[in-house]
Image (cartoon, rainbow, N blue to C red; front, side, top):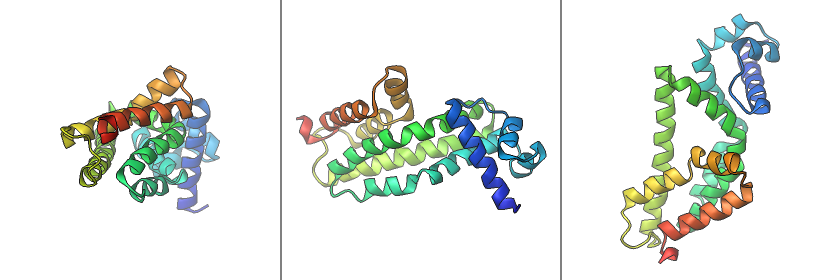
Amino acid sequence: MSSRNSRKRILDAALDLITRRGEAAASMAEIAGAAGVSRQAVYLHFADRAALMLALVRHADEQRGLEREVRKIREASNAVAALREMVAVHARMNPGIWAAARAVDAVRRTDQAAERSWQDRLKYRLEGCRQLVARLHNEGSLRRGLDSSVAADLLWTLTSLRTWEDLVLERGWSARRYQTHVTALLLAGLTNAGN
């Protein structure tokens, strides 16, 4: 088996284990067993659990077509439609990425490389929120008197995985309820529709 195929098998097995369990508690040995490779083979591809978890999040993004979903936001006909699509993307994508993201969140607290990667992902998401708010502003849809940096911070927070987790997993909201109410809140708080 080629090195690339072996790496993919390991990532697929890890993603399957973590997704099925709904938690990050899969050991390197369990992942190796699920992938049909030795623990040594896992360590040939990933220096440690943190490296595996970081690669796993990128792999999950690719498997679930994150770039295609982000493109839907960017290509929306106007900023308000992009805002609606952003919440819809979170409602669709978060169930599939939650377990892997939670795994990285657990690892990052003790691993500097994982923490840097986590922070880079947060900054990337914040930049996307800033771009969407700038588009709202440029199209005249940003609520009058609302500072763009405040709007971006609110958008970033209200569409965070943590907010989704609280509403959907903790409070038992359906994806539809999450999408409906978070969209309405953002439209009322960030756009002229709220005036």
